[in-house]
Length: 184
Image (cartoon, rainbow, N blue to C red; front, side, top):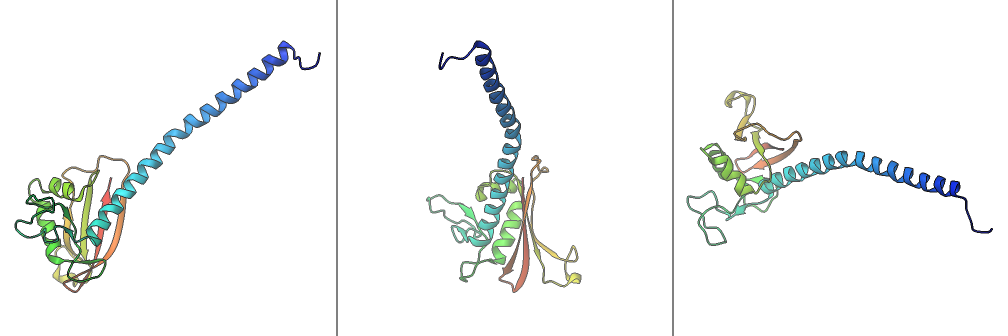
């Protein structure tokens, strides 16, 4: 009678196997929501970083996007991509005051936030704030820092997950600024 098992041993083995599979399945199902939340958090972090990197270290496409009627490389008239880097100086994190003022003006115009969002190619909503950190507190309104860019969505963020990135930048007006990008 070698190799034969009784019916009771067979039931015990199959029951143990089924219980193990059910236990592992329940553990995995409980893990999935936390995993999906982490994936969403990482997506928001990536979007925030991409927006800040595009603004700080890209001159835009075309480079003269702040002029009256720039021509995109794709042949159409208009802006393909906004970037604040001063292209005349070969330095990272060195922003053009003219591009800063144009971005702020275009974002605060009626319907401007959506145009900026399209030109930055952002997936979700974002806000961009650029402070001038070197102006004297008495010469700026509101004090203590001058706000050079205040680009916020027309409605508050709808996402529960938000991420903020702060970057120190130089401005070609011999000032130091802090760029704050928040997305959600």
